[in-house]
Amino acid sequence: MIAKEEVIPSGMAGRKVLMLLTVLFIAVASFSASATENDSITTALRGFINQALTFTERMPREKVSLHLDNTGYFRGDKIWFQCYVVDGIAHTPTVLSNTLYVELLNPRGKVIN
Image (tube, rainbow, N blue to C red):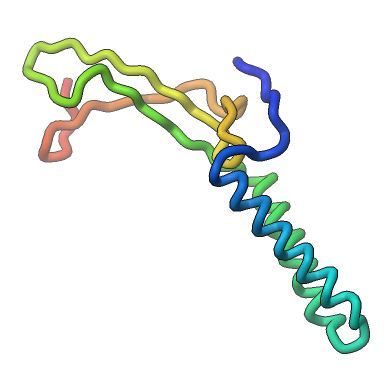
């Protein structure tokens, strides 16, 4: 298992998440400046942000990449592949999953033995 080194999300998805949280933070800060009128909006935005962060912590996303050695194969060819399972936000190796099962399907969607 590879230890998770990076805590701050990186890559395009990580930048999008950080941008969204930054925009939401600015929106909450600007709404809280006029506290009496917008208390319900501020509370709702803070609640939404907290729920989004809680969901991300409880239900982490993983992404799988499968690299093949060729674009097409004939009967009897050996298929060499390599798989990566990474954290869905930070794109670092995940520590959640240990096993990945891969099935080879024919054009009709049936598993090839």
